[in-house]
Image 1 (spheres, helix red, strand yellow):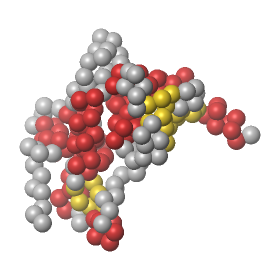
Image 2: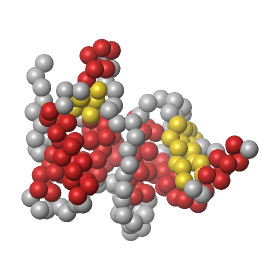
Image 3: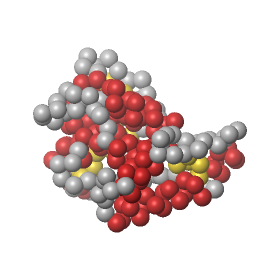
Image 4: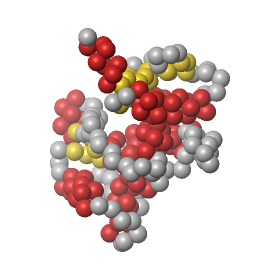
Length: 204
């Protein structure tokens, strides 16, 4: 088996780092250091291998099926920016080498991720698009939860997810919704929301 040779021409992560180094994109020190750490792992850490198949599938769904929900871009196709592509590629492409060797399974390295986005910089649209993508092409039977301190904040992303869902499935052929959740009829994956107030009520 021939190992893939990764370059800025076939990796959004490497192209993003390259454009930062060329001065085309300005980022903070913490992000730059993390990018260096990731690229060091990509090339020099035998615990992981890099496989972009899952990431490409998700980016393809976002750009060909997802429609934006905010004016003045309402209903327009989602065109992922380079940082979004680099983020999605990184999130889904690092796999555990030992799991593949021992069990033949491609297990994601990342289980949790912290994404910091400034106000008015596509935070809700990005998170909603990722959630919808997992809803459609992710694992069957999953629970996708929109959680926040209060119901209003949790509803921001949940409502955007719901609107995107209605735009790609307007006749509810593959999905259905009620007051508690949105359901994928084919995979039984659910999207629902919860706030700290509701969690406290459940814990009583």
